[in-house]
Amino acid sequence: MEEKEFSFEERVARCALNSIFGFEPRKGKMLIDAAGGAFEVFSTPKDELSQILGAGCRMQFLDRITEQTFDAAAMELEMLGKDGCRFICLGEDCYPQLLTECQDPPLGLYYKGVSPPGEVFTKREGIAVVGTRSPSAYGKEWCRRIVDSFSRCPRKPVVVSGLALGIDGLAHKTALEEGLPTIAVMATGIDRLYPPANRGLGESIAATPGCGLITDYPPGTDAIRINFLRRNRIIAGIAGSTVLIESKIKGGGMMTARLASSYGRDVYALPGRLDDPMSQGCNLLIRETLAVPVGDMGIFMNDLGLGKPATACAQDFREGLESFYGDRLSPEELQETLRTALKIKSSRGISLDELCRCLKVPFSGISRITTMLQCDGFIEIDLLQHCSIVPVQRGIAR
Image 1 (cartoon, rainbow, N blue to C red):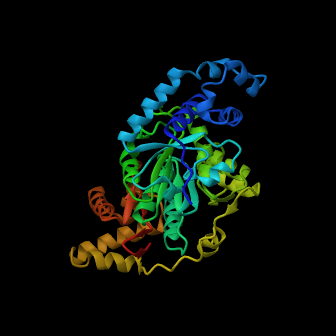
Image 2 (image 1 turned 90 degrees about the horizontal axis):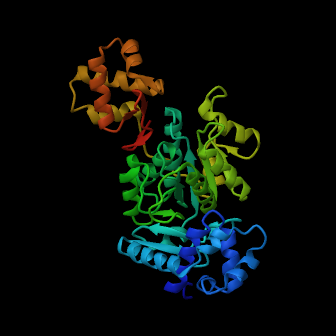
Image 3 (image 1 turned 90 degrees about the vertical axis):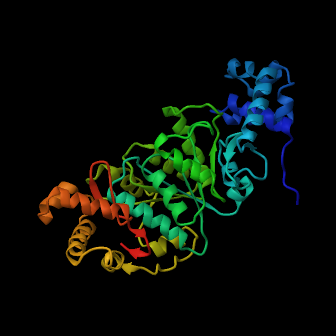
């Protein structure tokens, strides 16, 4: 069967209406349905359009439905095409089906990727992985473990997130490392990768088959607070399930999880300590029975419909270190490295200063060993110099 795809004129008209009614897409869809198409909206008298929208219609919206707006959208789409982007319309077969089931789907999505959008949105079910921009070592470790488990299931999903710092970026990065497709939903124009620290990650997503960048904001849109709220509904809408990994009571991850619940989607949350502010949001959703606590990985993956994950063929952490460094270090250096790495494993989030005190080693020695372990992918050190192991890499059980 031939896929449904709109003409260039209809696509331009829908793109123009999306820029006008971006925050109220239902009104734009009302006009399209009543006029018989988006292109026809631009030739319909303003008084008729006003009657369609009814009382409370803001005239500044209707005043923008002009030939000039249409021409500007046409130029925009032509320029985007040269940059490898396209505008996907609500109603086309390549538009994410799950998003159409929501009450407020965007009139269209800007898309950038090397694979056709139909392949990205229809081949696999999406699972959103979201959370705080400032995760603890606990949150980062479990984010990696969860996405790694996705990659070992019989039915592999596409990982959906928001390209933000913290859990979002880590979910995208881990998906790429584990060979999973990932979709980044942006709160800016398709030409504005934000935040700057994740620009390279966004470029990698756009260049990887099966992955893509999407947004409903026109090109040139910068990152402002309200844009992130609108973006979250798309993350929740295109994913069949949402997993929240660490969040305060108020935050973007919490909003995404609540939106997903309102859409009738399954929501899961990583439980944490009762006195940890970063886990208060997750714990609240669990108490409110809006989210199922993440627990046993096998049961969790089955609940998501992915099947039981294959057991990773992995070495013990100590054995992996000995194997990797055995012929690189002297016996004395190897023992110091093992002692440091195992202390980090048993004390998640320990700082460099604390390592010095516990192991009675000068800072210069701890700094040298931890830098080596970080460069070789065994541990990571955050901006506050807290250390934690990288739980899944090199086939080593960590």
